[in-house]
Length: 432
Ligand code: FAD
Image 1 (cartoon, helix red, strand yellow):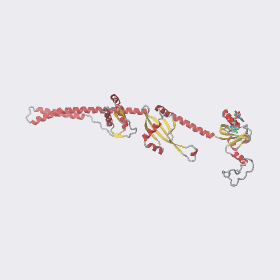
Image 2 (cartoon, helix red, strand yellow):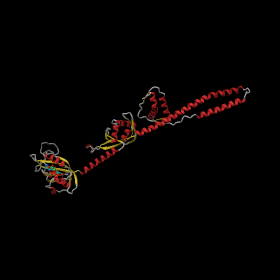
Image 3 (cartoon, protein in one colour):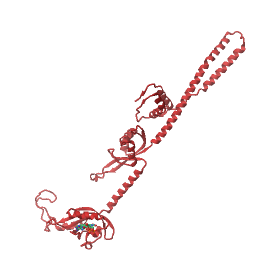
Image 4 (spheres, rainbow, N blue to C red):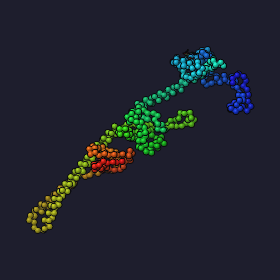
Protein backbone atom coordinates (compact mmCIF):
# COMPACT_ATOMS: atom_id res chain seq x y z
CA UNK A 1 0.00 0.00 0.00
CA UNK A 2 1.21 3.50 -0.79
CA UNK A 3 0.50 5.75 2.12
CA UNK A 4 3.57 7.94 2.31
CA UNK A 5 4.35 6.65 5.75
CA UNK A 6 7.62 5.12 6.83
CA UNK A 7 7.60 1.45 5.74
CA UNK A 8 6.96 -1.09 8.46
CA UNK A 9 9.56 -3.74 9.31
CA UNK A 10 8.83 -7.15 7.83
CA UNK A 11 6.88 -9.37 10.18
CA UNK A 12 8.80 -12.04 12.10
CA UNK A 13 9.65 -14.95 9.87
CA UNK A 14 7.81 -13.31 6.97
CA UNK A 15 9.40 -12.88 3.59
CA UNK A 16 8.24 -10.23 1.17
CA UNK A 17 9.14 -12.50 -1.75
CA UNK A 18 7.26 -15.57 -0.60
CA UNK A 19 3.75 -16.43 0.33
CA UNK A 20 5.06 -17.75 3.62
CA UNK A 21 3.32 -16.11 6.49
CA UNK A 22 0.38 -14.95 4.34
CA UNK A 23 -1.80 -12.62 6.35
CA UNK A 24 1.25 -11.16 8.12
CA UNK A 25 2.05 -7.49 7.52
CA UNK A 26 3.62 -6.89 4.10
CA UNK A 27 6.28 -4.20 3.96
CA UNK A 28 5.01 -1.09 2.21
CA UNK A 29 6.86 0.56 -0.65
CA UNK A 30 7.63 4.22 0.09
CA UNK A 31 5.95 6.67 -2.29
CA UNK A 32 9.38 7.99 -3.25
CA UNK A 33 10.24 4.58 -4.67
CA UNK A 34 7.20 4.81 -6.93
CA UNK A 35 8.25 8.26 -8.04
CA UNK A 36 11.82 7.13 -8.76
CA UNK A 37 10.63 4.00 -10.49
CA UNK A 38 8.41 6.02 -12.84
CA UNK A 39 11.07 8.66 -13.35
CA UNK A 40 13.72 6.09 -14.25
CA UNK A 41 11.57 3.62 -16.14
CA UNK A 42 12.89 2.71 -19.60
CA UNK A 43 9.53 3.36 -21.22
CA UNK A 44 8.28 6.92 -21.95
CA UNK A 45 5.58 7.74 -19.35
CA UNK A 46 3.31 10.74 -18.96
CA UNK A 47 0.43 11.57 -16.68
CA UNK A 48 -2.33 13.90 -17.86
CA UNK A 49 -5.48 15.37 -16.40
CA UNK A 50 -8.85 14.19 -17.69
CA UNK A 51 -8.50 16.52 -20.72
CA UNK A 52 -5.14 15.16 -21.80
CA UNK A 53 -3.12 18.12 -20.45
CA UNK A 54 0.31 16.88 -19.51
CA UNK A 55 1.12 17.13 -15.79
CA UNK A 56 4.15 14.92 -15.67
CA UNK A 57 6.59 13.19 -18.06
CA UNK A 58 9.56 11.00 -17.13
CA UNK A 59 13.16 10.93 -18.40
CA UNK A 60 12.46 8.33 -21.08
CA UNK A 61 9.63 10.58 -22.39
CA UNK A 62 12.19 13.36 -22.74
CA UNK A 63 14.66 11.05 -24.50
CA UNK A 64 12.05 9.74 -26.94
CA UNK A 65 10.22 13.04 -27.72
CA UNK A 66 12.99 15.58 -27.24
CA UNK A 67 10.71 17.69 -25.02
CA UNK A 68 11.80 18.68 -21.49
CA UNK A 69 9.12 18.46 -18.81
CA UNK A 70 8.72 22.23 -18.54
CA UNK A 71 8.19 22.48 -22.30
CA UNK A 72 5.21 20.11 -22.29
CA UNK A 73 3.65 20.73 -18.90
CA UNK A 74 0.21 22.20 -19.39
CA UNK A 75 0.20 21.32 -23.07
CA UNK A 76 -2.11 18.69 -24.50
CA UNK A 77 -0.69 15.34 -25.58
CA UNK A 78 -1.69 16.35 -29.10
CA UNK A 79 1.60 18.30 -29.11
CA UNK A 80 3.08 14.95 -30.20
CA UNK A 81 0.49 14.32 -32.86
CA UNK A 82 1.69 14.20 -36.44
CA UNK A 83 -1.42 14.72 -38.44
CA UNK A 84 -1.13 11.63 -40.65
CA UNK A 85 -2.71 9.42 -37.99
CA UNK A 86 -6.33 8.98 -39.16
CA UNK A 87 -8.97 10.74 -37.05
CA UNK A 88 -10.80 7.45 -36.57
CA UNK A 89 -7.84 6.17 -34.54
CA UNK A 90 -8.20 9.01 -32.03
CA UNK A 91 -11.96 8.66 -31.97
CA UNK A 92 -11.64 4.94 -31.21
CA UNK A 93 -9.04 5.74 -28.57
CA UNK A 94 -11.22 8.24 -26.79
CA UNK A 95 -14.33 6.08 -27.06
CA UNK A 96 -12.39 3.36 -25.26
CA UNK A 97 -10.96 5.72 -22.65
CA UNK A 98 -14.39 7.23 -21.95
CA UNK A 99 -15.57 3.70 -21.16
CA UNK A 100 -12.70 3.68 -18.64
CA UNK A 101 -10.89 0.97 -20.54
CA UNK A 102 -7.19 1.05 -21.41
CA UNK A 103 -6.34 1.67 -25.04
CA UNK A 104 -3.38 0.30 -26.93
CA UNK A 105 -2.32 1.21 -30.44
CA UNK A 106 0.13 2.75 -32.85
CA UNK A 107 0.38 6.49 -33.58
CA UNK A 108 2.70 8.54 -35.74
CA UNK A 109 4.32 11.06 -33.38
CA UNK A 110 6.42 14.12 -34.08
CA UNK A 111 9.45 14.92 -31.92
CA UNK A 112 10.47 18.35 -30.82
CA UNK A 113 12.94 18.56 -33.75
CA UNK A 114 10.15 17.72 -36.20
CA UNK A 115 11.31 14.18 -36.93
CA UNK A 116 8.67 11.48 -36.83
CA UNK A 117 8.54 8.11 -35.11
CA UNK A 118 6.06 5.33 -34.67
CA UNK A 119 4.79 5.17 -31.08
CA UNK A 120 3.32 2.06 -29.54
CA UNK A 121 1.12 3.67 -26.92
CA UNK A 122 -0.88 2.35 -23.98
CA UNK A 123 -3.20 4.77 -22.17
CA UNK A 124 -4.75 3.74 -18.88
CA UNK A 125 -7.49 5.78 -17.20
CA UNK A 126 -6.72 6.53 -13.52
CA UNK A 127 -9.86 6.44 -11.38
CA UNK A 128 -10.46 8.06 -8.01
CA UNK A 129 -12.18 6.41 -5.06
CA UNK A 130 -15.57 7.43 -6.49
CA UNK A 131 -14.78 5.67 -9.77
CA UNK A 132 -14.33 8.86 -11.79
CA UNK A 133 -11.52 9.30 -14.28
CA UNK A 134 -9.25 11.97 -12.88
CA UNK A 135 -6.08 11.31 -14.86
CA UNK A 136 -4.60 9.27 -17.65
CA UNK A 137 -1.33 7.38 -17.63
CA UNK A 138 0.37 7.17 -21.02
CA UNK A 139 3.25 4.79 -21.74
CA UNK A 140 4.88 4.58 -25.11
CA UNK A 141 8.00 3.39 -26.87
CA UNK A 142 9.53 4.14 -30.22
CA UNK A 143 8.88 1.09 -32.45
CA UNK A 144 10.00 2.71 -35.71
CA UNK A 145 12.90 0.28 -36.13
CA UNK A 146 10.81 -2.77 -35.24
CA UNK A 147 8.19 -1.62 -37.74
CA UNK A 148 10.86 -0.99 -40.38
CA UNK A 149 12.23 -4.51 -39.90
CA UNK A 150 8.75 -6.04 -39.94
CA UNK A 151 7.91 -4.15 -43.12
CA UNK A 152 11.24 -5.16 -44.65
CA UNK A 153 10.54 -8.81 -43.87
CA UNK A 154 7.02 -8.41 -45.29
CA UNK A 155 8.40 -6.73 -48.42
CA UNK A 156 10.97 -9.47 -48.88
CA UNK A 157 8.28 -12.10 -48.42
CA UNK A 158 6.10 -10.39 -51.01
CA UNK A 159 9.08 -10.11 -53.36
CA UNK A 160 10.01 -13.78 -52.92
CA UNK A 161 6.39 -14.84 -53.40
CA UNK A 162 6.16 -12.77 -56.60
CA UNK A 163 9.38 -14.25 -57.95
CA UNK A 164 8.31 -17.77 -56.99
CA UNK A 165 4.90 -17.18 -58.57
CA UNK A 166 6.42 -15.82 -61.78
CA UNK A 167 8.73 -18.85 -62.14
CA UNK A 168 7.93 -21.11 -65.07
CA UNK A 169 8.50 -24.23 -62.98
CA UNK A 170 6.18 -25.66 -60.34
CA UNK A 171 7.54 -24.93 -56.86
CA UNK A 172 6.28 -26.39 -53.61
CA UNK A 173 7.67 -26.25 -50.07
CA UNK A 174 6.82 -29.04 -47.62
CA UNK A 175 7.17 -29.17 -43.85
CA UNK A 176 8.43 -32.16 -41.87
CA UNK A 177 5.00 -33.81 -42.09
CA UNK A 178 5.06 -33.36 -45.87
CA UNK A 179 2.30 -30.78 -45.76
CA UNK A 180 2.41 -27.93 -48.27
CA UNK A 181 3.46 -24.65 -46.66
CA UNK A 182 4.07 -22.75 -49.88
CA UNK A 183 3.31 -23.34 -53.53
CA UNK A 184 3.38 -21.21 -56.62
CA UNK A 185 1.10 -20.45 -59.53
CA UNK A 186 2.59 -23.22 -61.74
CA UNK A 187 2.04 -25.80 -59.01
CA UNK A 188 -1.59 -24.70 -58.58
CA UNK A 189 -2.00 -24.99 -62.35
CA UNK A 190 -0.75 -28.56 -62.08
CA UNK A 191 -3.48 -29.37 -59.54
CA UNK A 192 -6.02 -28.06 -62.03
CA UNK A 193 -4.55 -30.02 -64.91
CA UNK A 194 -4.13 -33.31 -63.06
CA UNK A 195 -7.55 -32.94 -61.48
CA UNK A 196 -6.19 -33.83 -58.04
CA UNK A 197 -3.61 -32.70 -55.51
CA UNK A 198 -0.59 -34.43 -57.04
CA UNK A 199 1.73 -34.25 -54.01
CA UNK A 200 1.24 -37.85 -52.87
CA UNK A 201 1.88 -39.14 -56.41
CA UNK A 202 4.94 -36.91 -56.79
CA UNK A 203 6.47 -38.06 -53.50
CA UNK A 204 5.70 -41.73 -54.26
CA UNK A 205 7.31 -41.42 -57.71
CA UNK A 206 10.28 -39.58 -56.21
CA UNK A 207 10.79 -42.22 -53.52
CA UNK A 208 10.57 -44.97 -56.14
CA UNK A 209 12.98 -43.20 -58.45
CA UNK A 210 15.48 -42.47 -55.68
CA UNK A 211 15.02 -45.50 -53.41
CA UNK A 212 17.08 -45.15 -50.23
CA UNK A 213 18.82 -42.07 -51.65
CA UNK A 214 15.77 -39.96 -50.71
CA UNK A 215 16.06 -40.58 -46.96
CA UNK A 216 19.84 -40.33 -47.20
CA UNK A 217 19.43 -36.93 -48.86
CA UNK A 218 17.16 -35.83 -45.98
CA UNK A 219 19.67 -37.10 -43.39
CA UNK A 220 22.69 -35.48 -45.00
CA UNK A 221 20.67 -32.35 -45.93
CA UNK A 222 22.18 -32.62 -49.38
CA UNK A 223 19.77 -31.79 -52.16
CA UNK A 224 19.14 -33.72 -55.35
CA UNK A 225 18.62 -32.65 -58.93
CA UNK A 226 17.34 -33.81 -62.29
CA UNK A 227 15.26 -36.80 -61.11
CA UNK A 228 12.82 -37.83 -63.81
CA UNK A 229 9.32 -38.68 -62.65
CA UNK A 230 6.23 -39.85 -64.47
CA UNK A 231 2.82 -39.05 -63.01
CA UNK A 232 -0.23 -40.76 -64.37
CA UNK A 233 -3.12 -38.39 -65.04
CA UNK A 234 -6.75 -39.35 -64.58
CA UNK A 235 -6.94 -39.62 -68.39
CA UNK A 236 -4.24 -42.36 -68.08
CA UNK A 237 -1.72 -40.19 -69.80
CA UNK A 238 1.79 -39.87 -68.42
CA UNK A 239 3.10 -36.43 -67.49
CA UNK A 240 6.85 -36.25 -67.15
CA UNK A 241 8.81 -33.97 -64.83
CA UNK A 242 12.37 -33.40 -63.80
CA UNK A 243 12.41 -32.87 -60.08
CA UNK A 244 15.03 -31.19 -57.91
CA UNK A 245 14.94 -30.83 -54.14
CA UNK A 246 16.72 -28.72 -51.51
CA UNK A 247 16.47 -29.06 -47.76
CA UNK A 248 15.91 -25.82 -45.89
CA UNK A 249 16.47 -25.39 -42.15
CA UNK A 250 14.36 -22.88 -40.27
CA UNK A 251 14.83 -21.83 -36.65
CA UNK A 252 11.79 -22.28 -34.46
CA UNK A 253 10.38 -18.82 -33.69
CA UNK A 254 8.36 -19.84 -30.64
CA UNK A 255 9.19 -18.60 -27.13
CA UNK A 256 10.05 -22.15 -26.01
CA UNK A 257 12.91 -22.27 -28.49
CA UNK A 258 14.36 -18.87 -27.53
CA UNK A 259 17.08 -20.28 -25.26
CA UNK A 260 17.07 -23.77 -26.71
CA UNK A 261 17.06 -23.27 -30.46
CA UNK A 262 15.21 -25.89 -32.44
CA UNK A 263 15.30 -26.36 -36.16
CA UNK A 264 12.60 -27.37 -38.57
CA UNK A 265 13.42 -28.92 -41.89
CA UNK A 266 11.57 -28.03 -45.05
CA UNK A 267 11.82 -29.56 -48.50
CA UNK A 268 11.75 -27.27 -51.51
CA UNK A 269 10.75 -29.16 -54.65
CA UNK A 270 10.91 -27.76 -58.16
CA UNK A 271 9.19 -29.62 -60.97
CA UNK A 272 9.82 -28.89 -64.62
CA UNK A 273 7.30 -30.35 -67.03
CA UNK A 274 9.22 -32.25 -69.73
CA UNK A 275 6.25 -34.18 -71.13
CA UNK A 276 6.49 -32.54 -74.58
CA UNK A 277 10.22 -33.24 -74.75
CA UNK A 278 9.70 -36.83 -73.58
CA UNK A 279 6.97 -37.42 -76.16
CA UNK A 280 9.22 -35.98 -78.86
CA UNK A 281 12.11 -38.19 -77.76
CA UNK A 282 9.79 -41.18 -77.63
CA UNK A 283 8.51 -40.50 -81.15
CA UNK A 284 12.08 -40.27 -82.47
CA UNK A 285 13.05 -43.44 -80.65
CA UNK A 286 9.98 -45.36 -81.85
CA UNK A 287 10.57 -44.23 -85.44
CA UNK A 288 14.22 -45.30 -85.17
CA UNK A 289 13.20 -48.68 -83.82
CA UNK A 290 10.53 -49.05 -86.50
CA UNK A 291 13.15 -48.38 -89.22
CA UNK A 292 15.57 -50.76 -87.53
CA UNK A 293 13.03 -53.55 -87.31
CA UNK A 294 11.93 -52.98 -90.92
CA UNK A 295 15.55 -53.20 -92.07
CA UNK A 296 16.02 -56.31 -89.98
CA UNK A 297 12.95 -57.88 -91.61
CA UNK A 298 14.13 -56.90 -95.08
CA UNK A 299 17.57 -58.49 -94.49
CA UNK A 300 16.01 -61.56 -92.97
CA UNK A 301 13.70 -61.89 -95.99
CA UNK A 302 16.58 -61.46 -98.40
CA UNK A 303 18.65 -64.07 -96.58
CA UNK A 304 15.78 -66.52 -96.68
CA UNK A 305 15.23 -65.97 -100.46
CA UNK A 306 18.93 -66.28 -101.25
CA UNK A 307 19.42 -69.37 -99.11
CA UNK A 308 16.33 -70.86 -100.76
CA UNK A 309 17.72 -70.10 -104.20
CA UNK A 310 21.10 -71.61 -103.35
CA UNK A 311 19.32 -74.68 -102.02
CA UNK A 312 17.23 -74.95 -105.17
CA UNK A 313 20.25 -74.60 -107.45
CA UNK A 314 22.28 -77.07 -105.45
CA UNK A 315 19.99 -79.96 -106.67
CA UNK A 316 20.67 -79.70 -110.47
CA UNK A 317 24.38 -79.11 -109.78
CA UNK A 318 24.57 -82.21 -107.64
CA UNK A 319 22.93 -84.17 -110.43
CA UNK A 320 25.39 -82.76 -112.95
CA UNK A 321 28.35 -83.64 -110.71
CA UNK A 322 27.00 -87.19 -110.33
CA UNK A 323 26.72 -87.52 -114.14
CA UNK A 324 30.32 -86.34 -114.64
CA UNK A 325 31.55 -88.74 -111.98
CA UNK A 326 29.62 -91.58 -113.68
CA UNK A 327 31.11 -90.81 -117.08
CA UNK A 328 34.62 -90.63 -115.61
CA UNK A 329 34.21 -93.87 -113.61
CA UNK A 330 33.22 -95.91 -116.67
CA UNK A 331 36.80 -95.42 -117.92
CA UNK A 332 35.76 -96.31 -121.39
CA UNK A 333 36.97 -94.11 -124.20
CA UNK A 334 34.61 -91.26 -124.21
CA UNK A 335 32.36 -91.04 -127.20
CA UNK A 336 32.98 -87.39 -126.95
CA UNK A 337 35.81 -86.40 -124.59
CA UNK A 338 34.85 -82.82 -125.09
CA UNK A 339 31.47 -83.47 -123.37
CA UNK A 340 33.02 -84.40 -120.00
CA UNK A 341 35.36 -81.45 -120.25
CA UNK A 342 32.46 -79.11 -121.02
CA UNK A 343 30.36 -80.58 -118.25
CA UNK A 344 33.23 -80.29 -115.75
CA UNK A 345 33.79 -76.71 -116.83
CA UNK A 346 30.07 -75.91 -116.55
CA UNK A 347 29.99 -77.56 -113.12
CA UNK A 348 32.98 -75.50 -111.93
CA UNK A 349 31.40 -72.31 -113.25
CA UNK A 350 28.11 -73.22 -111.53
CA UNK A 351 29.91 -73.92 -108.23
CA UNK A 352 31.71 -70.58 -108.53
CA UNK A 353 28.36 -68.84 -109.08
CA UNK A 354 26.89 -70.59 -106.06
CA UNK A 355 29.92 -69.52 -104.04
CA UNK A 356 29.46 -65.92 -105.19
CA UNK A 357 25.75 -66.10 -104.37
CA UNK A 358 26.54 -67.50 -100.93
CA UNK A 359 29.06 -64.78 -100.29
CA UNK A 360 26.45 -62.19 -101.33
CA UNK A 361 23.95 -63.26 -98.67
CA UNK A 362 23.72 -60.25 -96.30
CA UNK A 363 25.21 -61.08 -92.93
CA UNK A 364 23.23 -60.78 -89.73
CA UNK A 365 24.31 -57.49 -88.19
CA UNK A 366 26.62 -57.84 -85.25
CA UNK A 367 25.31 -55.96 -82.25
CA UNK A 368 27.07 -54.97 -79.08
CA UNK A 369 25.50 -55.57 -75.70
CA UNK A 370 24.27 -52.47 -73.88
CA UNK A 371 22.17 -51.42 -70.89
CA UNK A 372 18.55 -51.88 -71.96
CA UNK A 373 15.50 -50.33 -70.30
CA UNK A 374 13.03 -53.18 -70.77
CA UNK A 375 10.00 -51.04 -69.88
CA UNK A 376 10.91 -48.54 -72.54
CA UNK A 377 11.68 -51.24 -75.09
CA UNK A 378 8.39 -53.10 -74.56
CA UNK A 379 6.44 -49.82 -74.63
CA UNK A 380 8.11 -48.91 -77.95
CA UNK A 381 7.47 -52.35 -79.48
CA UNK A 382 3.82 -52.22 -78.37
CA UNK A 383 3.48 -48.80 -79.94
CA UNK A 384 4.91 -50.09 -83.24
CA UNK A 385 2.67 -53.14 -83.19
CA UNK A 386 -0.41 -51.24 -81.96
CA UNK A 387 -2.10 -50.82 -85.36
CA UNK A 388 -1.71 -54.48 -86.22
CA UNK A 389 -2.83 -55.69 -82.80
CA UNK A 390 -5.90 -53.49 -82.99
CA UNK A 391 -6.72 -54.87 -86.44
CA UNK A 392 -6.43 -58.43 -85.11
CA UNK A 393 -8.33 -57.69 -81.91
CA UNK A 394 -5.34 -58.44 -79.69
CA UNK A 395 -5.42 -57.03 -76.18
CA UNK A 396 -2.23 -56.58 -74.19
CA UNK A 397 -2.54 -56.01 -70.50
CA UNK A 398 0.82 -54.93 -69.29
CA UNK A 399 1.53 -53.59 -65.81
CA UNK A 400 5.19 -52.72 -65.77
CA UNK A 401 7.07 -52.23 -62.54
CA UNK A 402 7.55 -48.44 -62.56
CA UNK A 403 11.20 -48.73 -61.58
CA UNK A 404 13.14 -51.41 -63.40
CA UNK A 405 16.94 -51.37 -63.39
CA UNK A 406 18.50 -51.51 -66.87
CA UNK A 407 19.63 -55.00 -67.94
CA UNK A 408 22.53 -55.80 -70.29
CA UNK A 409 21.25 -57.01 -73.68
CA UNK A 410 21.18 -56.52 -77.43
CA UNK A 411 18.56 -53.91 -78.18
CA UNK A 412 17.78 -54.96 -81.75
CA UNK A 413 17.59 -58.66 -80.98
CA UNK A 414 15.42 -58.07 -77.91
CA UNK A 415 13.12 -55.78 -79.91
CA UNK A 416 12.78 -58.44 -82.61
CA UNK A 417 12.12 -61.05 -79.96
CA UNK A 418 9.28 -59.06 -78.36
CA UNK A 419 7.88 -58.11 -81.73
CA UNK A 420 7.83 -61.75 -82.86
CA UNK A 421 6.25 -62.80 -79.57
CA UNK A 422 3.47 -60.33 -80.26
CA UNK A 423 3.09 -61.37 -83.87
CA UNK A 424 2.94 -65.04 -82.92
CA UNK A 425 -0.09 -64.46 -80.76
CA UNK A 426 -3.40 -65.42 -82.11
CA UNK A 427 -5.13 -65.07 -78.78
CA UNK A 428 -5.04 -62.14 -76.38
CA UNK A 429 -1.91 -61.95 -74.26
CA UNK A 430 -2.21 -61.22 -70.58
CA UNK A 431 0.95 -60.04 -68.97
CA UNK A 432 1.39 -58.79 -65.45
P1 FAD B 1 -8.43 15.97 -30.68
O1 FAD B 1 -8.84 17.36 -30.45
O2 FAD B 1 -7.74 15.31 -29.54
O3 FAD B 1 -9.71 15.14 -31.15
C1 FAD B 1 -9.63 13.82 -31.60
C2 FAD B 1 -10.86 13.05 -31.14
O4 FAD B 1 -10.72 12.73 -29.75
C3 FAD B 1 -12.15 13.85 -31.27
O5 FAD B 1 -13.19 12.95 -31.63
C4 FAD B 1 -12.37 14.37 -29.89
O6 FAD B 1 -13.73 14.58 -29.60
C5 FAD B 1 -11.78 13.26 -29.02
N1 FAD B 1 -11.24 13.80 -27.73
C6 FAD B 1 -10.13 14.54 -27.60
N2 FAD B 1 -9.91 14.79 -26.29
C7 FAD B 1 -10.91 14.20 -25.61
C8 FAD B 1 -11.24 14.12 -24.26
N3 FAD B 1 -10.49 14.64 -23.30
N4 FAD B 1 -12.33 13.38 -23.93
C9 FAD B 1 -13.10 12.82 -24.85
N5 FAD B 1 -12.84 12.87 -26.16
C10 FAD B 1 -11.76 13.58 -26.53
N6 FAD B 1 -1.84 11.59 -29.21
C11 FAD B 1 -0.79 11.51 -30.05
O7 FAD B 1 -0.91 11.87 -31.23
N7 FAD B 1 0.42 11.05 -29.59
C12 FAD B 1 0.61 10.64 -28.30
O8 FAD B 1 1.69 10.22 -27.91
C13 FAD B 1 -0.49 10.72 -27.43
N8 FAD B 1 -0.36 10.37 -26.11
C14 FAD B 1 -1.44 10.49 -25.27
C15 FAD B 1 -1.29 10.16 -23.93
C16 FAD B 1 -2.36 10.28 -23.05
C17 FAD B 1 -2.18 9.89 -21.62
C18 FAD B 1 -3.61 10.75 -23.54
C19 FAD B 1 -4.77 10.84 -22.61
C20 FAD B 1 -3.76 11.11 -24.88
C21 FAD B 1 -2.69 10.97 -25.77
N9 FAD B 1 -2.82 11.30 -27.11
C22 FAD B 1 -1.73 11.21 -27.94
C23 FAD B 1 -4.12 11.71 -27.70
C24 FAD B 1 -4.23 13.21 -27.78
O9 FAD B 1 -4.72 13.68 -26.57
C25 FAD B 1 -5.10 13.65 -28.94
O10 FAD B 1 -6.40 13.11 -28.78
C26 FAD B 1 -4.59 13.28 -30.31
O11 FAD B 1 -3.26 13.69 -30.36
C27 FAD B 1 -5.39 13.96 -31.41
O12 FAD B 1 -5.29 15.29 -31.30
P2 FAD B 1 -6.13 16.33 -32.18
O13 FAD B 1 -5.83 17.68 -31.71
O14 FAD B 1 -5.86 16.01 -33.63
O15 FAD B 1 -7.61 15.91 -31.99
